[in-house]
Length: 248
Ligand SMILES: *C/C=C(C)/C=C/C=C(C)/C=C/C1=C(C)CCCC1(C)C
Image (tube, rainbow, N blue to C red; front, side):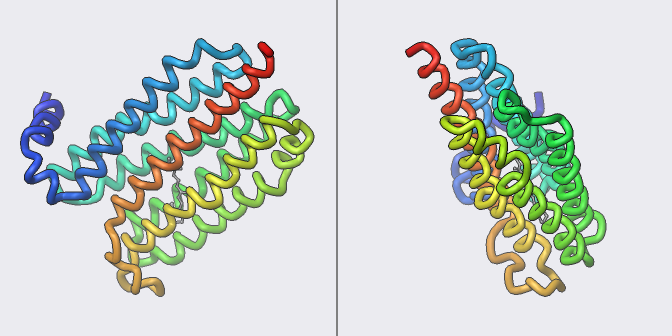
């Protein structure tokens, strides 16, 4: 109830809201994630059963994010501080689901579960070490950021050049192009996050020049909107393309 009331407050008190662009991006992010979830869930049954799980996972990713954005928006409004804990709980749930998407679209082409678990493991290392640098040992943010960054590069290498890339190439057609687009999201879209990390944790680190240059939360919120909704739309497009072919 308290959350609901403060949401009404946001709508009623736009003068406060408009000057606080950070909470505005939490608010818009929350709405965008909700809308995307409704879109994915409602479109699910119009596809061949082969694609339904992939679309379901797209919807789960944005739905989990919507719930966290609801709380993060509130936390920011109450305290004016970064909701680091909610942020990382969101990521530790949604990023592995994005790894599952890679597996699901390549499953018919022969993807193995071990490939999927490897990506999930690497993404867990990336996020846990990032959390340590941001919240537990901020004085050593550069060290933890480096470890996190290495895990990130291994993920990028794996999906672009590892077994997944070979399976995608062998599958060809819509699956191959969807895989390529998802790879670009990970290479370019996910690179937004280390930028947010650097502007948020730069104090006393080698990248101090970036400290406070932007709002860390705005950078993360933009990254989430692009990556979570974008990922889902790529999978949605793949389902549209291959269903159209099947009925033609
Ligand atoms: C929906 C949420 C997503 C796709 C979150 C992705 C997060 C990352 C790719 C975070 C990466 C980080 C680094 C590569 C180094 C610094 C620490 C992190 C955790 C911000």
